[in-house]
Image 1 (spheres, rainbow over the protein chains, first blue to last red):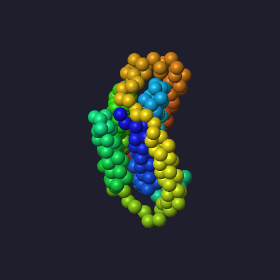
Image 2 (cartoon, chains in turn cyan, orange; image 1 turned 45 degrees about the horizontal axis):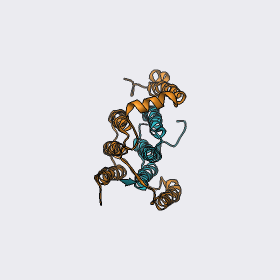
Image 3 (cartoon, each protein chain N blue to C red; image 1 turned 180 degrees about the vertical axis):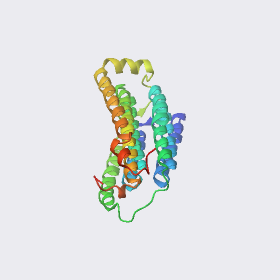
Image 4 (cartoon, each protein chain N blue to C red; image 1 turned 90 degrees about the vertical axis):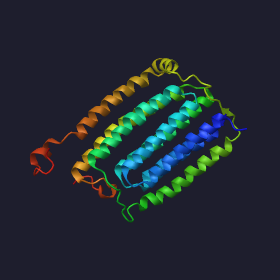
Length: 100
Length: 179
């Protein structure tokens, strides 16, 4: 038996790692992966709460989060390809103009 | 007394924590992507411990399989190299990140202290098989399900439009990126 707080602690740690990576990383692809890490942390707390409250709807919500993550990854990676095509860099500090 | 459940939780959790820290430490994006895949695989193990079998399978197939393959594909396609650090470029991030991290860790500590007495989560206490999930998804959550299908369609079209070559660039470019 594992207490609920252990799962929440792991979930919070993964989310904090995602936020830290989002803030300190300069590569736009790694920043994107940090967002995925945050979504995974939230998914873990969804499943843990579903098991704790005996509510299966929590597991269904994980699927919606996954769908949104897939859509976000598809569009975001397309944006990254478009950015790289025009700027030829992946460093976000050099992508600071809306219009070239 | 330490149960097998707790040992498995700690093992998968250690892989999760190590992968998440490795994602932050590595400077090459391909190493970060591989550590993120390790985190996702270990999270699938955690879902299995919580009795969510179908979620665990979908986590491996969709997240570690499809989404991360897309990431690795883009990293290879763009030939992304080592991350170059710029000095003083992320002062805003430090300015807002440190208070944000403090607030977040305070919230996590509050949750742990507040709910340290809550009863344990039993393994397999909830039916997480595809039949039960599907019945819930197609009865109670039918409208959100249909809306997410429209969302996926819009995302596919947006990705195609964004990633396709702009028509003006191919005609006016000096030939350096055509083809």
